Length: 609
Image 1: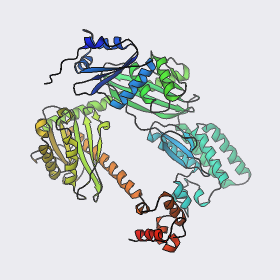
Image 2: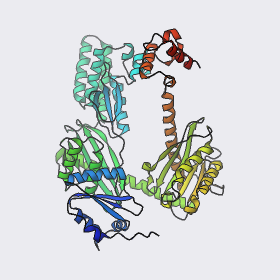
Image 3: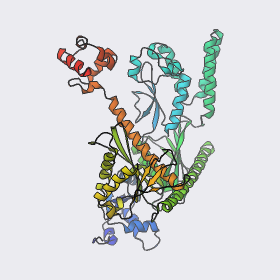
Image 4: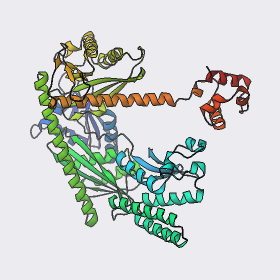
């Protein structure tokens, strides 16, 4: 029991003024549990300590307060921006954080004589190319890139690959590139391809089709029937793609944001329109942690989302925002441009907003349905594993490597609402015998739980180990050495072995007594365990592949002392790659500027060791 006195709110409120600002509520473990803003700090904070009218969630928040820290700001807009920064940096328990850390992808046409078509993430730089987007999902941009390549046959290869090719690649053979790398097309013809691709990406498909018809007629008049047939096929493809492409009547860039609330869950549905073309949509799901409404959620989403991503000129929202002037002023400070937020819209905007609201409602219904299925799986897990209560937190571990190379361990975390992806962790495994999975498992568990020995609230209720009796035995030893099973007596740990046939549905669940538990193949609990184990495997192998690819991208030239970036580039350009350098003798290497006989000998010896 803590001897700290209860928070004296009356004394605290006498020190607070009525100016705008931000407040942080902090618990007895010195963790920030809630961040809020207010136009009048004294009134807002006093509302938390009313004798009546407080919900259960607010009472729970207030009971956890040990102290409150206050920061005054000059304006309410500054308070809104500061609140947003603190929520993102601190991720307080009672605040809603809309997780969208990845930058949205763009289609980029690079600035080269023969521009490259590629996916770009980050802040667009006009000096490096022409950008189209952003696209709300990887699926929508892959769909677009795929059709642009098929219709306009632009190169997508790296510059180094293009400059060193001696014959056209497979993309040319399957008619997805016109082969500029080996001179199968000239700059003028390729530039025409680029102009047509730009028109398509800008949503000017109708104009592009009209131009293609003119070109087809010109080719026919010149009796160039082969060229005319190619253009005819392109027109047909353009028409098919345009039918699937949702082209609106809007001009400019518009985002539509709709919110739906049900059973303490919310869905924010974001539709993105650029140059009159809908680039797709993305849903954001959250569970309410305090009393909230759709207006507050939309306001929080807007300030959090557009502090990471560029805002369009207009944002249409499904609910009226009272402090719209404060919000637009904050967006102006973030984006250095005027942004209009509207709610009462008519005609085509009204229809587009109704479509977004319907999508938000349907997405939330599907999400709640999947959540109810997940609840049934958790309940079945309690029955089959003989647990006292449904686990609030499940952690699963897996090891991935290739013949001992680039060993990675993963820890994925699941709660009653599903995967908690922001709590996933990967671990680099070092200083073990390559391929020793037992040592790798020992290392990751020791690193994971050693720092949590004195914090039972940070420990899971259920631990799953991807492996058989050997890995489970190691896990039990580690937890016993760290005294974890004493700190949290109700913690259970199981191994998930692939079974004799190594097929999905035939897994063996092994308990702490090394007994195999046989679940029915259609058991909801087994499906949940498979889902968690597969996620741990996916997360581990993704990290392993990234590490392995990074290691293999490293050139052997980088390991040679005295060879810097410029000399490496000169060598690669002169000899056409590492194989050419290996084939060169000392005398040939000396022909490179800055390389004397001694250095040439070092290079030769290093590559022939």
